[in-house]
Image (cartoon, rainbow, N blue to C red; front, side, top):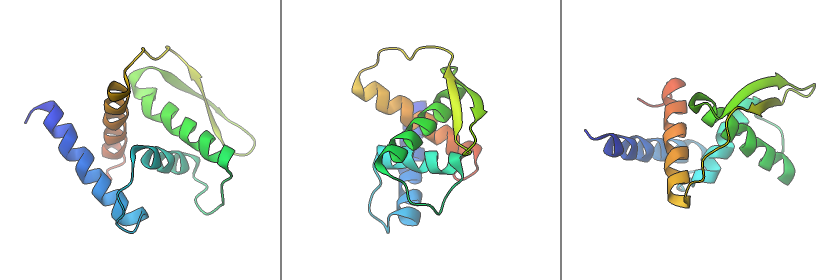
Length: 118
């Protein structure tokens, strides 16, 4: 199977699984899945998050997701348990579609690593 086709199939499978588990079957968008990764990485599941916290959670997720690609490196946890990353390499300028593909690929790899999907 071609790599693009494999990514497309895994992404579709992941969206279905996450949507049924976290959105009562409504289809989760890319941003919502990035947010879920942020919550997973923070590990503080049962608290209410303010709007600024939600943006910070998405930032955590993006850093964690792009860490294996060499763009970020984990630095430390602060006193509230929030992970902090440092930039190792600036992200290349990508078109919106290319950004989405990179994030979908990173998310699929993340959930494969967590053994949430196969």
